[in-house]
Length: 76
Image 1 (cartoon, helix red, strand yellow):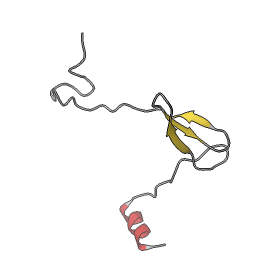
Image 2 (cartoon, rainbow, N blue to C red; image 1 turned 135 degrees about the horizontal axis):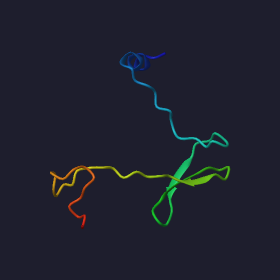
Image 3 (tube, helix red, strand yellow; image 1 turned 120 degrees about the horizontal axis):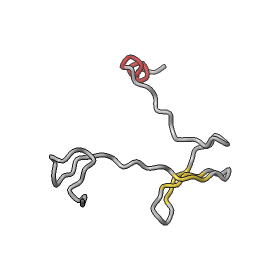
Image 4 (cartoon, rainbow, N blue to C red; image 1 turned 30 degrees about the vertical axis):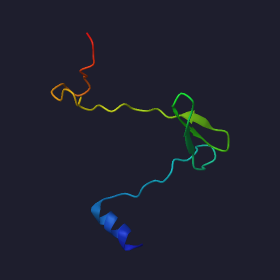
């Protein structure tokens, strides 16, 4: 074991799992986008899928006093 891994172990850090892999053939997945701008994942074995994206809840820069998730552009 090298020094970097020993330091990480003492600090309570874990190693990165690496690239996501296909559940069917255990090969690394390839990522891209389609014409609508959606992120796709695919594998040489024929697997294809879309990634589910999450929108982040951030403060509105135009009105920082609004609660998180609210927007000054919302119309009522």
